[in-house]
Length: 69
Image (cartoon, rainbow, N blue to C red; front, top):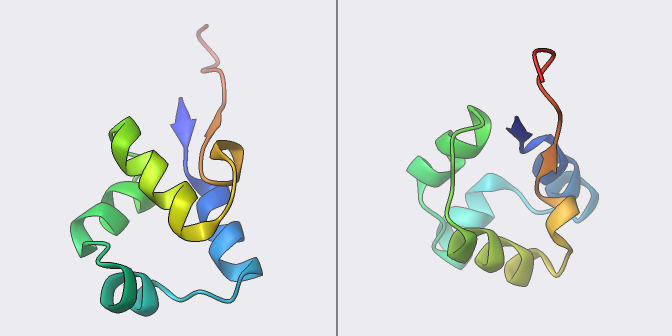
């Protein structure tokens, strides 16, 4: 399972609010909702988030094996 918990730690550490992501960087509310609920996002979107936040992929998403795997 992919989780986006690191994304929220990263924006907190960088003092970037979701309001700023929406209004200054054009991130949609629907994307933030997808991240909140660990729904799939495209690699293009992942790249955009890394560029905006000046971070690595693992600062946005992490893979956690399911218990059934």
